[in-house]
Image (cartoon, rainbow, N blue to C red):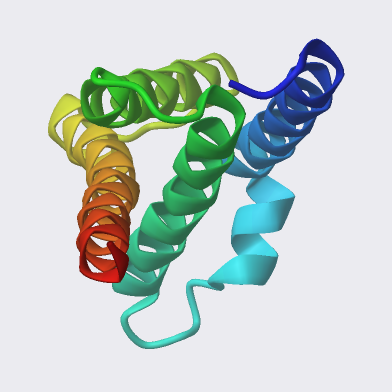
Length: 135
């Protein structure tokens, strides 16, 4: 496990990334610039952008937390919960999405966490095999 100072820097980086993406997620101005309604398939583009943003948050969380037996669950459920907080923030800001649309957005969060978790598991297994072959 990294020393305390490195852990603190990683935690601060995670908080900054999560806060920036939270702000972007509840900002109508960011939505208007990132995927204007005039673009064909703007809703699909918006969902892909949200999954990409959740991948960034989950990757930063994985970097902060380091290896753990529970990392996969933490990334998937934690990113889904984070997405739920964004949905709550959007509601407070006046979003008119249906509950089904909000639930789909939370699933996009879980997908972002899953993508990072799958990458971490794959990288760990690949690294373990490489280590065994060197011995």
